[in-house]
Image (cartoon, rainbow, N blue to C red; front, side):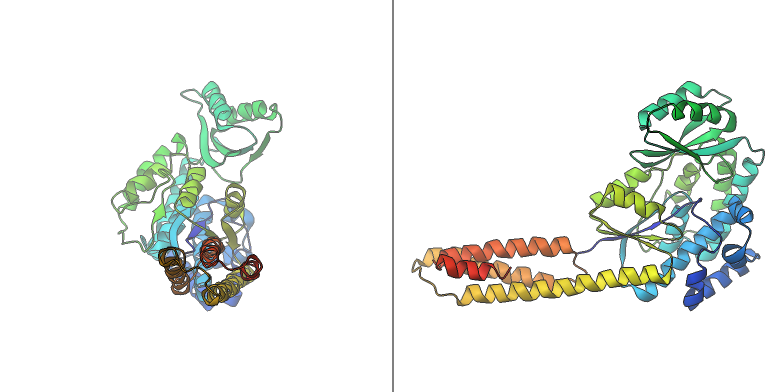
Length: 405
């Protein structure tokens, strides 16, 4: 059975014009942005669709804007796709989108939380002393050594995001960051880029904001979530008793996105939908786990692409089932040349029962993935081979039947 995960992007994925195409094509998205405008008392829709990029970049604006854009993609997907997620996860701010999507917080409460979160983060970094840098093609161990070498009690640099085995984000004070960047640039094949964020997020420099957020969070009631949401801090699903604490820790702890992707894979996720602007998380997932069918959903055309893929899967499954039925029938009617009753029971009757059970399972379970169907095809093929061999069917006739697969 396809196991689906919805994943939500974090700050830095925002851009002017995001969600406008969905707003044009889905009434549910129009209503969502109207609700956001009314809840915050600002024209968030205008800021997202045609605002100033620098204004959108401000943390207190970017966070509610991204939350709304991600929820817009989610609600639009519900009108087109028949997919039920088993696990949700979000990168940094995206974790709030996941929690709102699952229902742990209402949309209105989620908007107010991330607006306040953004304000607190912006206030903490108003003096411009902090920054973030993305680093590629340098190992975590080397980066940790450089951070320890350069950091002091007054100058802090640390790994803020583990995005993949060769992509990390550093966070900390501006001046020592410049020094560590110069050292990294000397390393062969390394790549360094300053991020378009307004502060040193996911570092101990955010503790003043985190302390204030902890007080604010408790003003908003928690609800029972519909689907589990993986925490950035633990890379494990939240429980209702730890959400406030882990959201506090999230502000001062690294985002364990690599471990999160590993958790999704290890728990059988076969389809991942990135709901929100850009394709950052989808690309990371494709690179780490190519076997997971990954899609980035932020326009009606991207939704149609997923729908087309699902329809193709359904068509493939139908053909596979028909082929299994035909091959099974051919094996059953093939002449039996073996008079041994015990061999007949063990090599014909019992395998036939197994095949019938296997086909029935596939027919009853919708949304099966191609891997499951391929496995079933292989299993039935071997059972049919056993039946034909037990019946002592001539080799040429056996091959004719087996070629049906």
